[in-house]
Amino acid sequence: MLMQWFDRAVEKRVRKVAQDTSRRSLLVGVGRTLVGAAFVLPVLPFDRSARAAEGRAKPQKTDVDCDYWRYCALDGFLCTCCGGSISQCPPGTEPSKVTWIGTCRSAVDGKDYLISYNDCCGVTACGRCLCNGNEGERPGYRMGVHNDINWCMANGTNMYHCTVAAAVGIAEPRRS
Image (cartoon, one colour):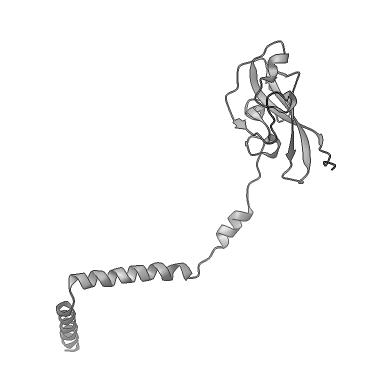
């Protein structure tokens, strides 16, 4: 008996709403609700701690990343990707007899270091980990500070393979 009364009351109310409401007004109401939700949802609180922890735990760049601090003026293939190390040529190659020099700031201690970039010569180009850092590069007529030159030209064979980046000292601050 109570259920029949409830069913009739609900039916009567639904029919009244259906008679007084058009489809267009229903769409307007739904649209207002969605627009209202778009303004209200961004201000609701939510947990951002996972994102904050992600931001703190940035992975350090390694010697196979072009963004590694020693490679600020390197133009070529990284020897660390070609069988060598950051400061030694791969087996079967020899270091170029001439080099170019760059000054790069260490991400670890914030100091500026003199970096000697040596091309490794004697076999065909490695083809892996191509980087082009031009920080502090000068025009081609200033040979010691230009990185677009095949520095293997001073060796017996001028075939370029890859480039190493050896730190040779701490840069002295400029005096005015």
